[in-house]
Image (cartoon, rainbow, N blue to C red; front, top):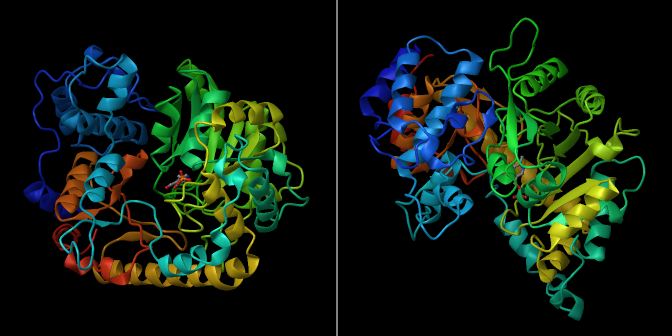
Length: 507
Ligand SMILES: Cc1ncc(COP(=O)(O)O)c(C=O)c1O
């Protein structure tokens, strides 16, 4: 049973909160709010100590937490993690500069360790294997071949000069055609409604800046790809208001982590009761980390909810072409014939996931809202993509033959094989896992948030980066995301000591 895992974690895991008696960067009460992700905004001096937080948690662990309590604990463990390692206050920086410098997150911590000590078969065989960052490492050969084709090596004066801050017109045309085709839009999408920036990360940040004022909130169901917290907060001081989804399917919900309009209504009501101004809802479809794909009916109901409440809806579709299970079909919001509120509906897509090109830094937004487009254009010059990269991306996206006959089928075949391999590895260990049928993610259960974090750290010490549920603000402890889009010999779990140590034979 679960206790087996807990005992193992308790025996071998490090303490998560080193003593911090006079910690100048202790978390503020805002960190402990059940719903608002607000780790950066409070001046450090207003806060209780990290030690206090940690003691409260330990006491609370004796009885199973409710979703809301679990959310609070997740926030406080995260706060503890941040404060355990944040540097002291710098006299050279503003309050905002200090907040930025002192910010620590689990995802960032794992990645920072990985990036200076990456595993390499020959050059660094003792390095860290990264199963925590959502990247597809299966298609380098295909991409190398395509990106070194002579048509990519084009230079003309306009590519060497400043471009339209929304992206070169030629690229926006190609993106509009690409999205019209792959999103099955009923009418051709318009290039003037496209904005291209250096990644969806920047788009999130810029959209938050132009649709929200500081301290306004955006609704988001949890768990979610946690870095959006920073995307919205670091520049714009916009908060995410969490709508916790339950990991247990109950009588009303046939699916675990099932999002319903009722839950959104409830979340919005709570946010208003807390005095927040909610401006928008963020949805991911396909979802990261849940790999959930909403049916057209579900999505339409969410869009109607937003219209009723005059909320913008930002629909992140960055995984739309990564669905490799033929029994599941994805429907883009751009395929909807008549959107409930087109002026408040904004669709994001990029090359990081579907084309395994996270290093190229290209994200796109499609919106019919001219005011939003004009405001984003003002910020575009801070987030533009180099001319030569815009050219390469345009060449790639208009090469339908390569996309449809080579890249997509082969990418999906490799993803499917990697997914099956890791699923088998986990099953052979008898671990209870939720194995999604698409995308990159698999979850394991563990126990409390403290133990989850301890286990995450233990994996890291054993040179494996994973993502734990609290990094995604999951309301129930014990979930881990495994990115399986990597070479098979990197995925061999048997070689990783913590898997053998911590996964009990039954839960
Ligand atoms: C759902 C989702 N949206 C956006 C991003 C970031 O995209 P980009 O690389 O374009 O900034 C990620 C990265 O993991 C993601 O999972």
